[in-house]
Length: 84
Image (cartoon, rainbow, N blue to C red; front, side, top):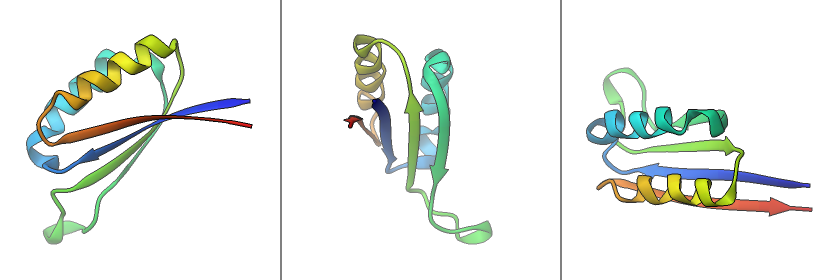
């Protein structure tokens, strides 16, 4: 069994959110599950965020999506494949 996740760290969440969302929309058919986490709520909302994506698809396409995310200033993405 093999599982692939994409971890995305946004260091400037407010500034990168629109670009990040557009890239995810472009590659949306590969995203099974999305979990977004950031510190703070209401008036103490953090500008840093972590997004965990459960993704599927051809390895080359997953790597291309990761590459496109890493081109955006303020975004660091890492593709991880786990198998048992």
